Image (cartoon, rainbow, N blue to C red; front, side):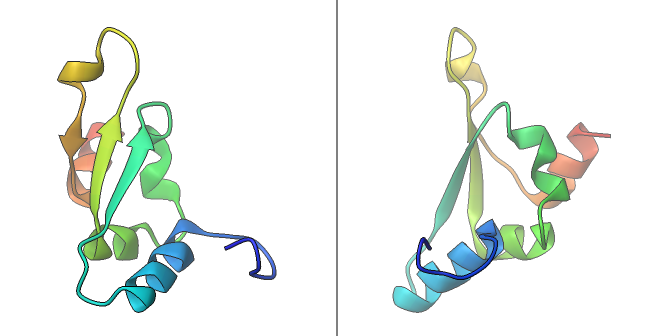
Length: 79
């Protein structure tokens, strides 16, 4: 990723990882502070089509806030 020219986008990184390890299941873990913005990321639907997404938080709410969620649920939660 650091060798890539120009901006670095999650969707591109995931495509490169999938190409490097065909057949492997990928998971994207994002923080609770980032989670509400995921639907605005570049080619968000491709991200959710390609990998499972898990939200993790820190602090006392951590155990209750860990989720595997698809793009439709994210869209519903962030409206």
